[in-house]
Amino acid sequence: ETVIASELSLPTTAAVLASVADSVNLTEWPDQPKRIANPAYSKNCDVTRKATSSSACVHGDVNATRTMVVFGDSHAAMWIPALDVIGDRYGWRVIQLTKPGCQAPDFPRYSTTLRREYTECAEYREWALKKIEEIQPEIVVISNQLKDVEWMVDGKPTTDGAEDAWSA
Image (tube, rainbow, N blue to C red; front, side, top):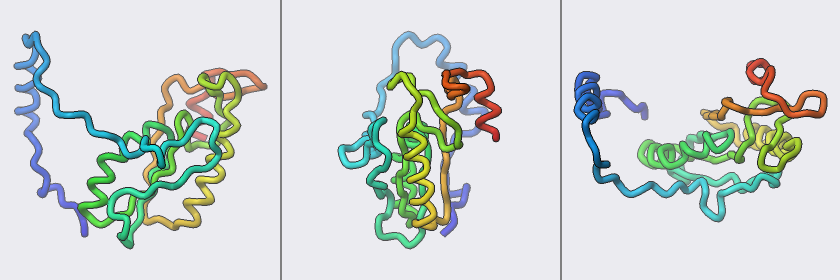
């Protein structure tokens, strides 16, 4: 089943611009919907920085024949609530392979949390890529943060050249 854009009910550009213009003079926050709990951070799905594998949590329609893998850092994990709903609605298993501060591209990462080279990230990436090959998903969604990422060059952390390393 294909998701057709006409099924979505979205405001027009003019309506969005009018809403933004109307909000300029607001002095109080409007009521906010309850925060959505992210199953990516549940007890069974959350991955620590020191882990080198994960439980490969399944979201969406767990019995579906089509499979999507979500791979990357916490910026990939943030998509789990939406992809869980989409997977359930449209018949996709959504398998989570995410690790905080651990990018999908292959380069040595420095962890500001661990204050050293993030060797667990490299090991996790290797494990995750083998897992993706084993799963043989129809789709792999990759999402990562690049801003302020430090990588290791000559044994020292730096942001210099990180974009080039990322691109390579």
